[in-house]
Length: 205
Image 1 (cartoon, rainbow, N blue to C red):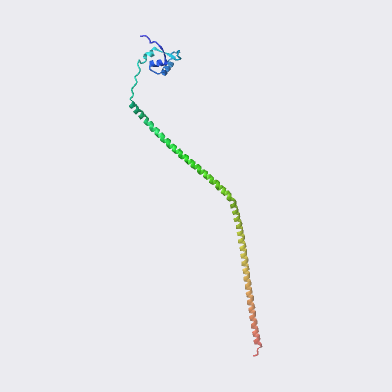
Image 2 (cartoon, rainbow, N blue to C red; image 1 turned 180 degrees about the vertical axis):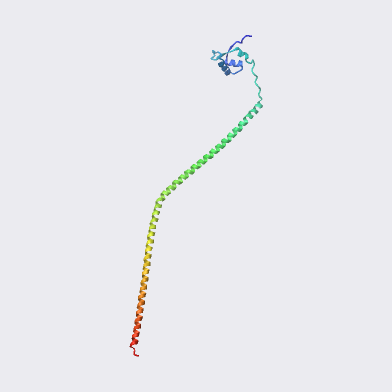
């Protein structure tokens, strides 16, 4: 039996003869170093060895009939876990979106509170600045009143001491006057006594 003769075929023709894809033919030709040449129709052809062609199946493998119902059931069975994952991802996305929206609301509220606090702080600082001169005047007035009160207490104390001394002096003067009056009264009584004795002495017996 002789050796099969090699045949020049395009990659598509070789793929049809060998029941493979043109890409497989090109890859095999490159690995096996099959000769190639261009054709007049701007395509390329390759010299396929006869033994390779002899080993190729003479008929194509029949396509397997697929039941549409079974195919649909298989697709649904394959998609169901993916659908569960998709639903979980969608739920997580909704939860994340809700959390982000809540955080945005909290951030806006915090910014509003911070702005209000800053405004109140500015207003309070202005009030303090406005009240500071009045407070300083109040402190000066209180110090002045305290000084006047201290001077008044000192003056009152001095006046009380002078009044006490005057009262003591007056009391002493009163006692002295009473002593003098008592002494005068005693002298008058003695004089009266002497006058009475003198009259009795001159009276005849």
